[in-house]
Length: 145
Image (cartoon, rainbow, N blue to C red; front, side, top):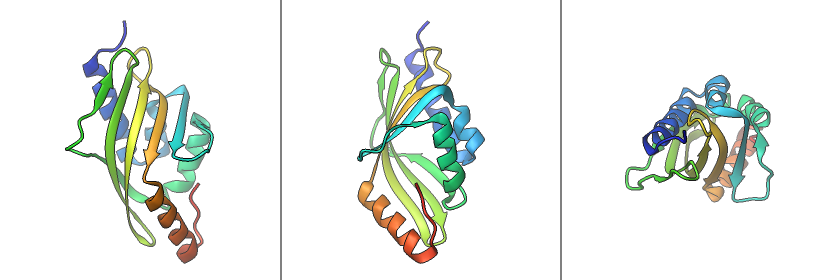
């Protein structure tokens, strides 16, 4: 049976909660084995679950205490037929150069059983990200990516 609207919302909330634990194992626990994660805008290819785990291994020590927060003024869009939830989120975190605060639209496609995420399409504030990554590299020599 296809997941209900409430199950899709529950899984999307669990996805956010997993991110807010900010460990590789917690974040990957919400992804199906075949999950792909694509970040836009840009022309980078989608990452596999394993590739995204490697990215997180490098990122978690640099961006500490990362948390995702729902933007209260933007209701989620839930497409039950496509098993897709679209969320407007903001993040907070800490780094060696100060606060990390970004903004996103996540479009997640949820597995047929409603338990895991099969696909992640992440739109982020590319100007903020570019400036932050540049400052981070210049001031600390640390690289994200």
